[in-house]
Length: 567
View 1: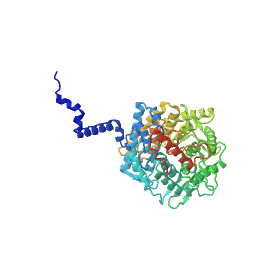
View 2 (view 1 turned 45 degrees about the vertical axis):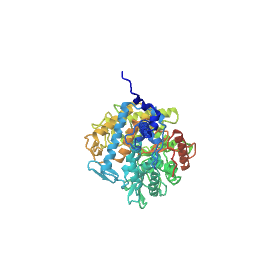
View 3 (view 1 turned 180 degrees about the vertical axis):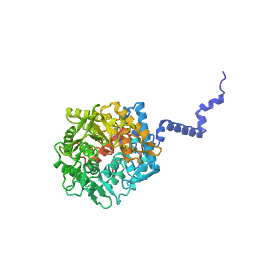
View 4 (view 1 turned 120 degrees about the vertical axis):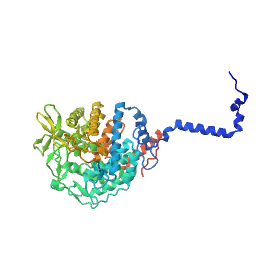
């Protein structure tokens, strides 16, 4: 073996490097660069990377971008790591995420700034006064899924949105989509642009409540404030329209400290309580001048979300004594619901019939819209006597089976708008269109969270695959004119992005993503943060600020950015 020459040992002598300091400097640079790449390579990734993993998403909540678009940290990363998704569920969730991206990119390409996309025509349409319904409706879905580039572009568009429009706005649709979407985006991002805009549009809706009884009209001109109810109801307001603003407006009062929003909507419930029937079932037409109710009773179109919000205001108000009357009214209505429950033959599908007024005849028809009911019952089954908990949950499971069969019983695998129940024949499609509605997958989401039964995920996956097979086109998603033939329509409803895809994504996500003990969904699937409070009325603006100070301190202990003080 050859021995090294004496000159080769010079590299091991300190004197050699003392006479050549540039070599020492070069070695230090190489060492620092190598350490940075290996140790801190994750910091090289943009916080707006749209391919965030589950761990990265919650890291984004802790280490928020240092600008006005700050995010709430919802759960410590250690909690998330304990809820590892199996490979199949993770793949399904990724498919839903990519569906959202396809829908959003199509809207952005062909209809940016319009209310909704007409995919086959490759253009936009304004059915909501040009308020950018799809943009506002999609904000929280983009945020939850981690599409931060898209969220920030949408945020910048919203910042310039002008609500001073000569447009007869639906008070109901504008509240659940726009006010709800903006409050939710604020709660998620902590960006006051959204809160300011929510207040702007709410102020333009307030004239609708200027009636002799405080029961609001259902439309209001956003420029003039002129309000009315439609002629086809003979001047009556629709139950779901007049009593589905409580979650959004109470939340707005909590965050702004201005009680006027909460006072308007709570007065409506007080007025309804004056004529609230013994069975808790309110007819769908309510006269804003006399506060008298008439026409049929339904948990479908025009009645549905009234019952939903009786429960959800109670949840939003921390289930305190101040909001106990909401829960009491809801339970009274659930007893009335039991009187509408029927079974089909021969397969014993449970359904909710409709009824003509007090003591009137029954209609063996159920809307797909009424498929929100299982989810509502699941949410209500978390409290009360064990007997009632069991009754609500069992009924939820039975109704969910029926709603799932709405989809599975058609050639396209998509549900019609409503179904007729015929003795000896179970059910048949009534109104045959499908407009990408979310109610069934919403209930599957609640049932999965409650029971952990994987069949609800499997049912949701079946529905998603049907949407992919029948509704997906190169330029977005469309509904079907007829679920029997598969003929397509030409509209991508904003609620497909706001609700359907969000609930599907959450169905395949850990329960720590939007935990139901911290958030309540409005009827457009916009999550609203529950203001924690020990007692009294629903949490005020001061309660909300105190909560953020607590979160700031907790984030500091976790090592995250603690700069979340409200402007």
